[in-house]
Image 1 (tube, helix red, strand yellow):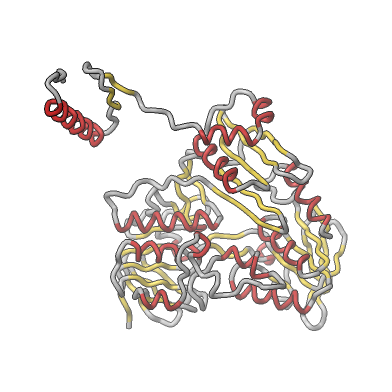
Image 2 (cartoon, rainbow, N blue to C red):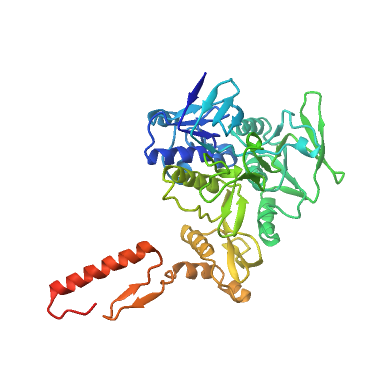
Length: 478
């Protein structure tokens, strides 16, 4: 037994929800689209799991954060999918995919065929066992990747209020979970091997600000070492975290955030893989023309970098999903995906945004004592990355626009002196005018760049000539 669909989305995360909305905007018919997901609920905004979902008061709960509320668009509830004729196959694992035959086999034995497949399988959390440490199955050890993980962590925080929490990892998940654990009145210690938190993005100076802020909230940091083992009691519960440096930390709750790995195993040997993900072109199309990949699982060309990369962030998932659907529905009109990498986080009373690439020379600016501050990255004489903490909506928009424009930077000291004002000034400048030709009559026309522009220019000139002839006797020579 099997079913057939025109479009199938494999994966039920953020990207799936945004792709579904884009499909409906572009007029798909009822019964043409199917979403297959291992999770028991329709797609939701995953960032909520490490933010609002963990709050002790007025926590976020479904259906409030179904996609696509994260982009201030429709909230896609189960009813929405039904009304739009979209088939949801939830709580279902796909055992195998045959991209040549365009079929998927589910765990229940059902075969689902497609004409176009969008891979939105995302990534899975790396487990301690992959680093030689046992204990992931202990009742008070948590990861945070899906709704089940988040519910488990909430239950642990409620049962361990006032106890000791150890967070393994100093990245996104570690930092956001540590803040939530503190808010839930737990004593928190963060452990990671790097010299400072958020080492893949933050400079030492930026990291120092956030670490000091966390310390003021009671968070302790143990840096430069890693977890080596757990002490586990007869009930299967971790009581202590043992570190490689020989120290030991008491633990009532352990949260592990040590990275993710893209879910590509179903496609190994069938599609081209690159940099850990499924290689796609600027239309998010894989090495098989009927298969597209979006979100964390896709390695795509990033124009501002001049190379292909795989990006792990919700903004990339949302926008790549939309672009893929546009490319599928209007193949001859879709352009290349021109994405400006964007990362953000909100913890406690803090809020930062980053755009571009953190490569090259770094220039810090602003008030690191607790006000608005940030940094620029300059490579080969051009701005390539911008970071800002505590900015306004307009200021965040300014650093985003400035980073995309990649303005020349000749003097780093002057850039530091101008600080945020540099991005604001650059963002407010009108775009440079294209080269112009002056026609003998004195009328100035833009030099056409494409054939379409040239045609438009001819039409415009002819129209103006006709008007001049009609309007007065003193006709110009064209």
